[in-house]
Image (tube, rainbow, N blue to C red):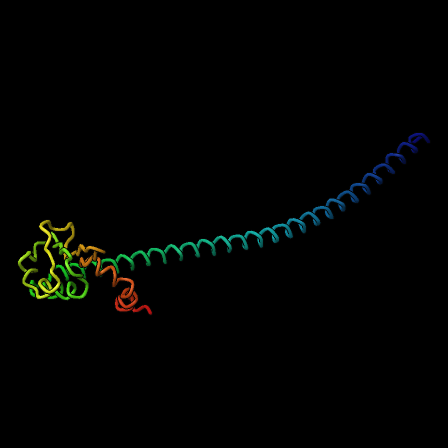
Length: 193
């Protein structure tokens, strides 16, 4: 082997050694970078998972709150419907009183609210007639008049006065008591205080 071959062989050997050393360093650097990348990825995933979990909990909490509000609205609407039906049934019960009791209630209301010379408008339910009203003591005592035309309402009477009118229809009387009695009705129906 010539000197030149020895030099070439030495150069190739040194180059191979240097190449192997560079490869080892590169592989080590790759492992370090891969380790750093994995650590960063784990930390990022952990952080993002915490953010997603927090966001998911907030979304679930908001949806739960909205659902609870919706349920409360529905329950309130149903309770209000039951209350309205209760008052409607009370109106039906008043309108279906026996004539004697119906007339007694009308007599009481006219006695309490009629002014001298008022006109009594009967309901269109035909329970009472003009002669029924004219037989009442209050009719003569307060010089009342019975209107020829029936009113466009069911139950009770309407008084037309010189200074003011008085709505004594059963619907009006029920509505006047509604606010006062709603709390009691709610307590009776739903046990609410």
